[in-house]
Amino acid sequence: MSDDSEAYFRRLVDPPALRERLSAELGPVDEFDVRRHPEGHSNETLFVTYGDRELVIRRPPPGATAETAHDVLREYRVMDALQDTAVPLPETVLACDDHDVLGSDFYVMGRTAGDVLRDDEPERFAAPEHRRRVGEELVDTLAAIHAVDPEAVGLGDFGRPAGFTERQVNRWAKQFQWAFEVTAEDREVPEIAAVTEWLRDNCPADHEHALVHGDYKLDNVMFAPGTPPELVAVFDWELSALGDPLTDLGWMLSFWRDPGDPAPATPELTSTFMEREGYPSRRDLVARYEDATGIEYEHDRFYRTLAVYKLAALGEMFYRRYLEGNSDDPLYPTMETRVPALAERCLRIIDGEEPL
Image 1 (cartoon, rainbow, N blue to C red):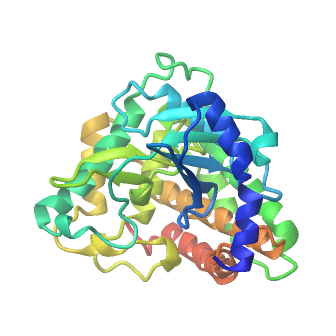
Image 2 (cartoon, rainbow, N blue to C red):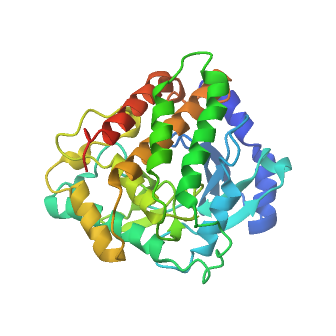
């Protein structure tokens, strides 16, 4: 670990304080170890060995963040509520709002065994029937999330689904404004204003109401060891709410690649292996989702543009944190050029140059 990385790690965790908190909840143990997970670019993830248990901690990054971002206790609440549903999840262990422990809110969950498909497919999935099943499991699990009855699991007050989509546009516009307070001094992204205006003019007036994940995509789920592919856990619920299920579908589709697609605007965040033979196309995924949920996927250009706009806003927030010295993530400085590329991608979707 470099000196900078070690200093950043010390900002994330106080091992003695964490051990004391876990001991109060789970009992004392002899073996204890904490290490930072290098993947993920929003909330921080820590792996903990606690006796014979493997645990995961989620906490916000240090430093200032945009309002409503990095709400790990909200993430814990929805995961805890869904433990006995058809949605596959890690075991929830505890949530803590005592900042004397780690300097922030955090929660603890059990660590799940399997593979997250991020950079490439596992060799065991490299067959057409397994590749197709990866896509089917991804869609079927999204349908399971959208089928949850929020009232039945204690999430009836988890948001205001009416007007959700319009609020999403306004919320992410505000995230841009927060980031631009600092990043505009370094470079500007003028295309964002045009995209914001188009989204506001084309936002669907009515939509279905459901529990939405908010960040549902292939590298936020885990597949069990072995074949055929079985999706065993959905992660990263920090943006979940009651709202428009098609925002989830549009987000998932914005990361799914078809053969012949343009080069990714954010190659560091974009897997391309699903362009291989056997993986379902975006249209295949949409058809399966519509069959599973009975919800028609209308306004595709809006939902995929909104998805890329949200990713660009996250990227601009990352760039602000980099400029302020609040992260050592090597992804963050790349957002100087990646966010303008995402803004251009938004315009291509709007103009029909990146069809479904």
